[in-house]
Each structure stands twice: as structure tokens, then as C-alpha cells.
Amino acid sequence: MRAIRLDFRPDRRDDLRDYDTIRTLRLLLDGGAVRVVDPSRPDERRTEVVEGLGAGAVSLNHVVHICGNGGGCPAVEPEPVPAGSPPDPGHALDRAAGEGVKVVIVDTGFDPEAAVRSPWLAGVTGQPDPGVDTANHTLDEYAGHGTFIAGVVRGVAPRAEAHVCSVFHFGGGVLESDLVQALDTVLDCHHPDVISMSAGTYTYDASGLLTFQVFHERRLRHHKGVVLVVAAGNDADRKPFWPAAAPYTVSVGALAATGRGRAGFSNFGGWVDVYAPGQDLVNAFPTGTYTYREPPYDNPPRVETFHGMARWSGTSFSTPVVAGLIAGRMSRTGENGRAAARSLLRKARRHAQPGVGAVLRPE
Image 1 (cartoon, rainbow, N blue to C red):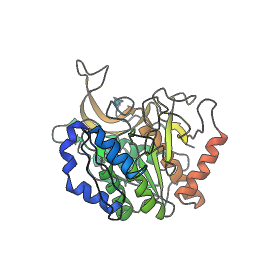
Image 2: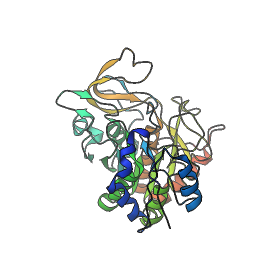
Image 3: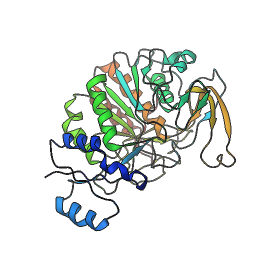
Image 4: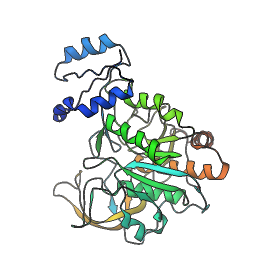
């Protein structure tokens, strides 16, 4: 018997009775039983569930966050830059890079007004970003995250077809099972070559995210050539961050702004495949007033007005650099996403930095 243990944070206890989540996981496991366990009873958790069902049969239904584990993320909050500032990294020398390749960004959503101000976003599609309040000209937490990432992809691969799915909303977190459902929809409805996802979590044990593992076994690996590029996280830690630590992803850490050495916030370790620029990047951002929530700007709260561009740091943004490079290589060589990723990783290892690892930079 296969089973999933639904074990949530204390403030999500009522979700243990969520029928849709249970039904979804039952479908993923081909009708196997789904057992709901009360997280307040550790003895039941240990003996009845873990020992009774065996390793790999049971896992938490984790909450997956935008590149963090519920704390301040990405690495820092965005900083305003003057309207009309050029993006950094700048536009690719190969203006045809990415032609014929589709990159789907699983994130907060897209601000269509950004494409009016930032011509490199022309043609980008996506679901609206709920954090952008156009009526009141205010920006909520994580607002503009997906828009900024789309801008990075388009800077590296100007001709790539880019679409932003709105999955991570206010607070930046989503249940693992719901995220897998969203990724399943991406495969069925959007037919991507490259999926860029700047999100993850730490897991209850070393087995990782069971629902993601099942998703890979039953769905992702059967979509020939589709590559999943994910962020390594921003906690300056070597502890595996999932799904980046899974062997079926391309995991991306961040280089320092100088290009030499790892960014101080970037996670690291043998499970990180490659490092790319991720500190002090500049790209498209919504317009509006933003109130800072993280130290050192939270008390008293700092308030800034953004005019369509921002400077931002995090493995959230090194991830679309690599996704864009994969798209660019695909359009040049005819390789599919996974083959292009393997080729780029071989190149990255040839340019490895001592004490960092494999490195890729926009061309």
C-alpha cells in the first residue's frame, strides 16, 4: 500500500481535512490509500506511519516558498532604480537567441504594463500578478517577482516565447501537492521546452519531496526534452533544498556581483549543478509604492516608489539566466531542453571556479 501523510504547519491544521488535496494525491499514486495523520501525535507519526509503511512511502505535504523557507526571500527586497535604466545582464549579442523555444515561468504572475515600458518583454504572456494593485498603485510582498524573472529570460534569450503562470501568491508559499498540480497543467496546456521555477523548501527528512518524485516518474520524464530549472535557495547553507537537490532538475546557485566567487546568500553543495549571476541584477518591475517588510528596513517601515525597473538579488534570478541560456542553445543547435542543459553544464564545469563550482554567464 502506498500512502501520503498530510502534515502541515500548525496554522494549516484545518487543511488536513481538505478533500481536494487528498483526492489529488490519490490520483498521483494510482489509487493508493491516502492516510491523514495528526501532526500533534509524534508517536503515531513514528510508529504507525513511518515504520508501518516503510521508507519512501510517506512524506509531508510540504509548503514550497519562493526561494526560501518562510523567511525573507528572495535574498533581499527589491531596490528602485531610475526609469529607463538598462537591464543587467544586458541584452544577448545573439538577437535570435531562443527563437522557436518556449520557456514557462512558474511564479507570481506577470504585469502586462511592464511590457509597455520595457520593450524586451514584448510578446511575453501570462496570468496577472495578484500582488500588483493597479487601482491603488501599491505593490504587495513578492509583487513583480515573475515579471522580473521574465525580463531576465528575455534579456538572455530575446526571441524565446515566454509565459508566466501565477502560482505563488500573497506570502509566496504553496502546498507541494498544489504546485505539482500546477506543473501538471503546465505540461498539458502550455507545452514548454524549459520550465523555470524559483521556489523550493527544506524537507522533513532526506528523502526529499515525494509528490515531486512521483510527478517526475509518472509525468515529467515522459515529456521528451522538457527541462526543469530551479533555484538553489538563499540561506547560505549546504543543506539540500528541494526540488533543486533532486537529480531530475537543473539546480542554480548565485554568483557574487563581481562574478568571482559565490554570492554570500546562495546555498551551495554538491547538489547544486551550476552558478550564474544572481546579485544586483536589474530588470523590469511594476510601478507603484512598496512597503519593506524585512530587516533592516522594517522598523520603522521603509516605503519606496518604483517606476518600472528594480535591482534585485537572489538565486531566484540566477535561475532564469540559466533557463535563458538553455533556450538560446536550443535555438542554435537544435538540441532539446535536456540535451542543451547537459551541454551547457559540461561547458560550465570547464569554466569552474575553485571553491565555487561550475559557472555559466550570459554570452
